[in-house]
Length: 523
Image (cartoon, rainbow, N blue to C red; front, side):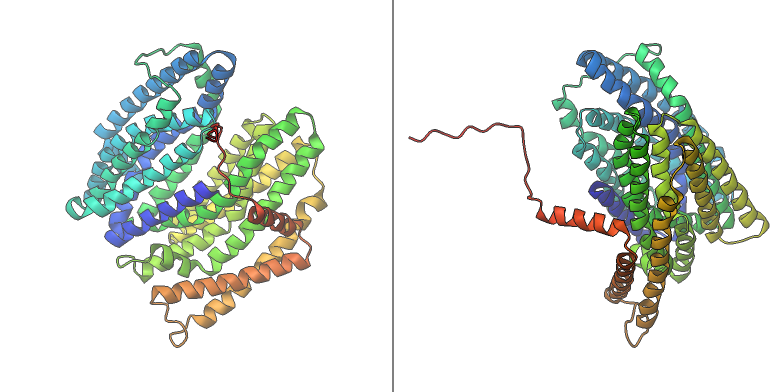
């Protein structure tokens, strides 16, 4: 959670520097230039690394030997790097027509600039492929700190590009920053990779046993990633048809909304997966259901008040994070409105991360894919309806995404309920009802002090310190009401997290090492 928080924080700093240095239209061009490189990277690298490479590499380490494991790693890296480079070269050559498909609402000059930035970003993505494989090797050896730092330094590179290069090369500064970030991503991992004795071999072996396993495991996951990327791309396409700056508003709203999702949904779901897999392997169905429900309630306990805060305090939040000289009140209002509608699906997206891992623990990858296809189809249909037929603003893309996210949650829950023999409906919905009521009341508790304090005679929120004070006071009051209500309603998760905080407070801070130090003998 700490590393996710740090990475998200750096991402928000990057976004603020972008809108401080460039107009929303210029920022939109840079953000749109990321779509094509990220699409290819996600399809080829995320599918290979997250699903296939790490488990097969680990299997080689435990059941064969390290040399064979490193040969397998070299085969995969060389193969993927070759194909990624080929696709990147084709994308660089045809960047302009491809960009026209992604941002049809941009003018010719904007599309030309987007294509130029896309070509630069692709150079950084090629380096990032190497960094991604270095990170996966480190994780296979249970080394997590350095890969986490590498991901943070990628954002640092973009920030350096904005600060140091933008004064001379303009919007190309953050694009060159992508290359700097990718270099840092690789460089910071080199000492760890060297310490693990990894030796890369320059060879191509398309038909090795390990490569065949990777292709087999990638198939379904790659389809799932493709569906997600189509969803993201359609959002950018439709936002560009509203206005160029709408791409900035939608992207920044998504960045702000995904902070609590990453902190609460992703981390707790990731922690629950090995427990769920163990219980499933032992045939402990009731324990499996209990773990799933407990973790789901914990995610809801944290994500529901976050939803209330983003909806009620959307304008102060956007102003604090993105408020800059080039990000005017209209930009703040449109981004805030989009954040509020996206937040309606925040809890659903967070819990869905857990439910998908529940299916994975049951060795079922097809059901989550089917649900994803249904929800993405609904999102695309609603987005087209809102933007092209009803002519609604960029905020409607947030609404369609929230509706699709909530449908996805209901479908996942219904299918999982059948798969495990049924949940206790009382245990499933009673805690959610209590927490939902508490969150609704806390939203009102957030609104009242925020409205009362946002007066020139009380707190002039044109000043940053006063804006921080307003947000802090309203948040503290709203969270206090939420905690008081869940305590009165005897929501068990309050006791769970209270106990965790006590343990953390009492825990001694010791950095343990396997190094043995022999005390010198007295003379």
